[in-house]
Length: 327
Image (spheres, rainbow, N blue to C red):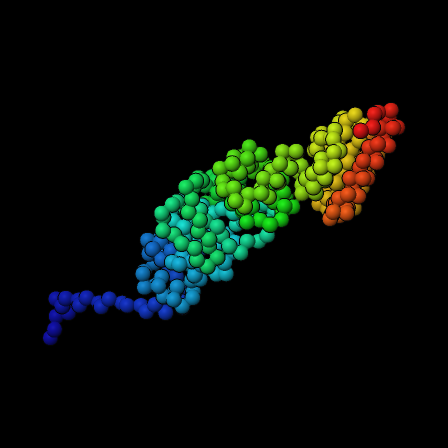
């Protein structure tokens, strides 16, 4: 008779689980939670077997966003593309241009590419929707959650180098300053330090900002008036009335005249129109003359000339009425 008590247990063979079974077996609770965007090397460092990571990438369970960079939970969202671009660029890479501006909430078209700034000689190359730009002026990323982004002023400078529409550039600069994302001094420094080629629209938009224009429509109106020799006005200044105040788009103090460019943003809803009407009533009873112009009236050369003529005649009439010298 065999004595089972003295019988040594045989070692069990190693259990080999095929890669495909990973897609069918629920993951154990102690499995590490993977970030949405990672490289194969990062996945292995987090405890995923090399064969498993390769299998998931090969069969499409992980979506390839860039060479060696994968999305673990498709479909991709905007932040996934930013993260993939930064990983593709390397440890010191920062995302700039339109992709960064969109994440800051500035008015740019949804970007189809991600611009990545990298150190000179790092070896990263453009591919797919990622554009790699080596630079000797690599900025430090903003201190904020998420993928590393260039500071707003630098992101704007990189974006507008390829812009074709002055109005769009003015809109981005104006929004960034209004939202306190950057200052005029920071934008001026980026203009001076950056390439001159392609900077014309940036330079013109910054000149408008220096005149205190807060929108593309206001910038065009101011430029038209200055070119025609209309002077004596201030842009975006506080006007007190009673115990309150409001910001006038254009102000002629001597004439007590206010010109407003009625953007769709602030005058489209009925409640906005009612608020503007009440404000005008208060201003006019306090002796201010108020003229409203729609942005559509500024379009084209003919619209620009008509706008200037309107303002000139309006100011001349106010000066005659107030006994002021016409000029």
